[in-house]
Amino acid sequence: MRLLVTWLINAAALLALPYLMHSVVVSDFATALLAALFLGLVNTLIRPVLVLLTLPVTLVSMGLFILVINAFLFWLVAQAVEGFNVASFGSAFIAAILYSIISWALSTLILKND
Image 1 (tube, rainbow, N blue to C red):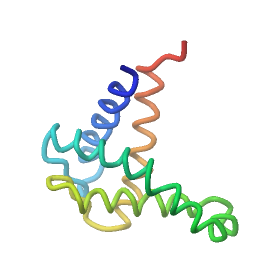
Image 2: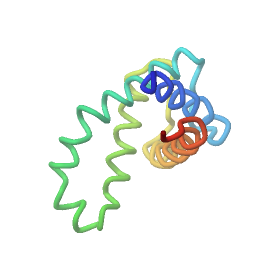
Image 3: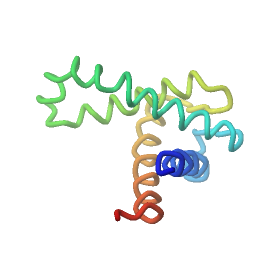
Image 4: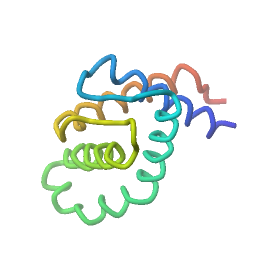
């Protein structure tokens, strides 16, 4: 049940992004659900490999390169899901940060730690 609620929270966070950034387009709620699912899968399967491969750069940048990895994965999902568009990599960078903040805030408000 918690996984389903988290998925819906992430979809809601994606739906909020076009109101904050005009360079992000989410056509409807079904697209947001699909994009949230893809983001979850990509972050589970591909992100650990990328983090491991870019570990030297991440260490030199004191962890800030993780933001670039998050932006790349956000942009990659936007390329894969029809109806979810991001204008540029710079927009994906900012959108990934906003998405994380919105998702965290909604999860903190809705999901209580028992």
